[in-house]
Length: 201
Length: 254
Image (cartoon, rainbow over all chains, first blue to last red; front, top):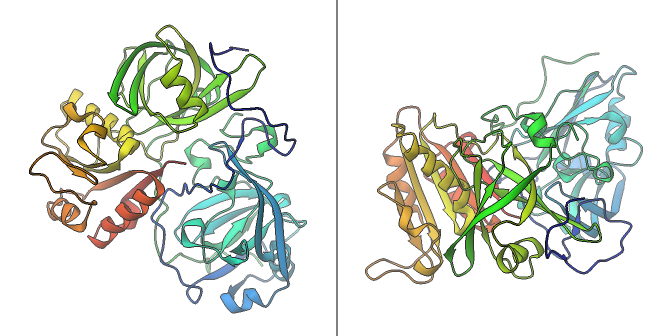
């Protein structure tokens, strides 16, 4: 351990919900997207799942809203080291979409892509089993454009760059295909509890 | 059925590729960095020169992760942009604002002295890097000018011919980081108070339009850095002035 002379840091809060190396951002919700925030209306938004599936298909805003509503209440963690506690997102579980398209048994990964062209890769196991959502509400209000509105992917158990803003679709694959940040040196999986920030962590 | 022909193409094209490959080893390894010099820039910002003997080198625009460790093992880590141009001096420079209540910037501004050591890993991310190849249009505000200054310094140090322009916003002349270093490539914008004869106001279409009117061959690669509020504003100005969205790279502080 390399102790920094004279460094005490902020008061310690014992919080088992805080992954290693993270701090509680409180009421802040920093915006860190690397691209221009798109002007995208709900009417223009669509969500598609294709690739290694039985029945590829697209959903319009209204069609997606006809699926069973699902809420995530919990925490989110950004690789830049802030975490935000007690957030509430509303939308639809990804299981509802994947249940319709039915991934092949050979499927192992997905690439999520945005209406801006942003991409991120995820193991299929991380976006199934009630652990991922398409979210369009935050704290009971429509998700704002800066935070990915009208709708974003939400995978809260991984670092938040995996939760692609302005989500446009998932491509189901039988291999890992690195996305935008993953090609820029970030970790393939991004589990905050194992501090998988950068490739090689 | 495996579907390949019918995959969806987003209506906008961002998908901006990274500019360079990133070294996995450099990104993973924590190294000791020794403060060798502290220079005050403004009442709220100072530059810290660090000796990092095994630094693998960086490109202008890249950042690093820095960590401080308390006696009880508590660790605080932050991303900081690198201010210095790449050189072989074994040193890098960071310019840090003193953030209200900031545990890391507070340590740098109130405790740190030459000889103190911290830990760094990097350089990180190839996305905001500028290798000095394409014409660069740089828009920054406050300490968002830090990675852009690395580009300006690199441009000068190498005597590059490729066009480079910097539009930089500061609250006042007193808060204007690197004030003495700017040259003909830079247009300053002052938002609260300005030197005599200079208009006070926000960065506007009138600042951006002349820069986009002088399109260099191949067009500008735009780099925007600052708070999210500034980044939203500046990137909209660029898009409105005709800069393609897939040639705008944004780094937001947060």
